Image (cartoon, rainbow, N blue to C red; front, side):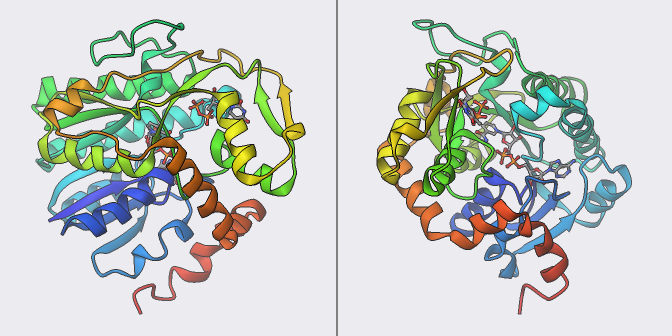
Length: 339
Ligand code: NAD
Ligand code: TYD
């Protein structure tokens, strides 16, 4: 049973590779182009396994991706490779379209050409846009009303996936998940940025009034949801995944201040993000009934474990902070991980 995991050197992808290794018998073929967000140090333990292989490939590369599908009979694909940071998409959205749209299209063409049995398209709650306080959480039938160029590129890819199911009969499911946190997240996202800044006594930059609401889910719960969607999802269906933990950003930052013992004087209000979505919240009843899945990691425990992980993994964090993680591929890839 060989599966392809795109984006396997990123935050969720690296956690998924480890999760599949520990909880299934699958062999895992990672496809990742190692952008700034890709970090082989996040999977250096997994790469030692004979069940895991790594391919330094861009998902929009037609020849390389076709070669991978031709040379291996995949039972499925978990598609996570993406440009994923809203702030970057505001500065320059073109990489978001090359990867999230053109890259997804290339994978879909190969799934059809090679009759790949299952394609799990990993999407986000952000495709639904923003909720006001008191509005009902998003269900899978909500309109797609993305606010950021990132969210629009993900919505575009969701629609392409749907069209390949309808037009070509491709066996695809779409998952839409809320904000993840946990080990190996790149410190440009709220939680790891605040944790590392708190450790280092740096400012904790809160956008606008800090009252924006996100629904937080531990990355391991997300990985369990992706496996459930792979195993039990129906072709053409969308499944919302979420942590049922709505919190204002300021509440999250204050919890991090408490857990790290930092001074709350580090909290600094900064200019708000352009087009900043006010609130996300997910109705996950479809996934709980049809995929027999629910999140199990409570936020208090999950956040404490995450703070402890960043504290215990100084080599990983230092390499990310200094940029040294980028040298890992050159230094180690040809030096036989599997010895
Ligand atoms: P990430 O930015 O940490 O990792 C993305 C990975 O994709 C990196 O390893 C990067 O090198 C790789 N990649 C980027 N462009 C590529 C390309 N052209 N070809 C091959 N590889 C490429 O992202 P993440 O937070 O792990 O998110 C993974 C997926 O989950 C994304 O599709 C994202 O939209 C989705 N998602 C994320 C969250 C979240 O809270 N982080 C929530 C819901 C959904
Ligand atoms: P982020 O982790 O970028 O995820 P997303 O934008 O995909 O939800 O941001 C989470 C929330 O935290 C979002 O409302 C923006 C806010 N935020 C800050 O207030 N300060 C920061 O430095 C960052 C990175 C985010």
